[in-house]
Length: 135
Image 1 (cartoon, helix red, strand yellow):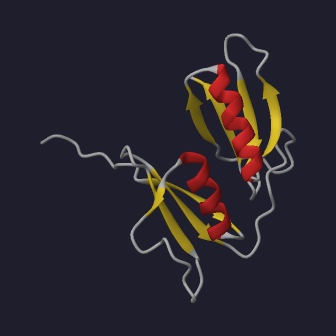
Image 2 (image 1 turned 45 degrees about the vertical axis):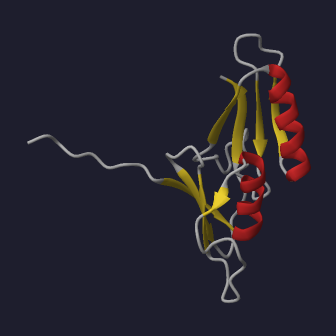
C-alpha cells in the first residue's frame, strides 16, 4: 500500500488586525478571499483566508491580542517564518517593492546590488518579514 503524505493547504499568519493584513496580501498578491470572507464580520474577523488563483497553497490570517514584531535581522525576536515571493526580472522587482511599500510594507534589507541573487527583505504591516526576489 502506498504511503499517504499530508498536503500543505495554507500558511497562517498571526496578526493583531486580521482584516488589515489580509487586505495587504490580497492587494500585494492579487489573490481573492475565500467565499464568505470578503465582507467584514460584525462578530469580528478573527480568521480570514485568501485563495491563490493558480491553486496550491493559500494564506490565512488569525487574530491575536498581541504580537511583538520580529526584530530581524536582530536576534531578540527571530522571524521564525517568512514568505518568499519571486518575480521575473529586476524591473518588476523594483515595481513590486514600490507597491509593497505603498501598501504598508517597510524595507528591512536591500540586496539588489547582488548580481546573482538580487532581493529585498520587507516587513508586512504586522511586522512579518517576507522576501521579494528575482527567481
